[in-house]
Image (cartoon, rainbow, N blue to C red):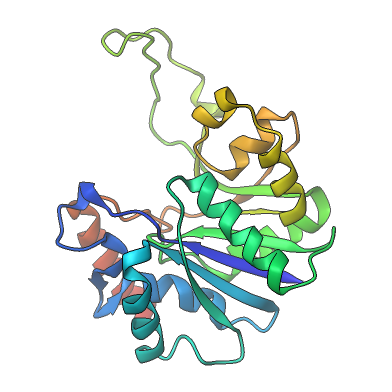
Amino acid sequence: MVFAAVLGGGVGSRMGADRPKQYLSVGGKPILVRSVEKFTCRADLACVLVLVPEEWIAETEALLAGSGVSGGDVPVVVLAGGATRNDTLRGAIDYLEEHFELDDDSVFVTHDAVRPFLTQKMIDDNIAAVREYGACGTCIPSTDTVVESADGTAISDIPDRSRLYQMQTPQSFRPLRLKALMDSLTPEEEAVLTDGCKIYLLKGEPVVMVPGAVTNIKITYPTDLAFAEAFAAEEDG
């Protein structure tokens, strides 16, 4: 079975809005709704989990119901996110283990709630990559030169741009394997985690790349909303 988790547990402090950014509207539709509906339209998903701040659970359930996203053929379950991304992933897998029969063939697609312009091809590619390789991340080539600074002041290295990529989501895994790897993390390893793919790399396990797109933006700052409005107008066309 294939499962999806839309991760919206952050509060979006960098946006400077009066609510978490995933609840802001783009093109007349909440960002969270745009992201969730990319999964609920699929017939191959057994369940879509939506993980949000605990105090926003009731409002999220009402928002998804009012938007017609929940209540369809694909079950949508709203859960509280954890204190960290790792905690949120663990909570999602715990829920799936409790309510479904997970096995080594199960696929777990995870996606940032504030990346509302992912495509069905990205989801298809993630599912196919997990089935063949076990874990994957959605990436695009880096178009900017990236510099490294050891002290935060001076440039200490300029890596070869041809080898650099920007990580997006979805990131997808075998859920039972992901949980086993999380359970094996040391406190030092947990401290440097940024996402699920990092867990695999810390444990020496392969993660393959699938193609993303420059339009698959993460809405983080107020300036991102202008780009999002343009993308929404084209998508809703």
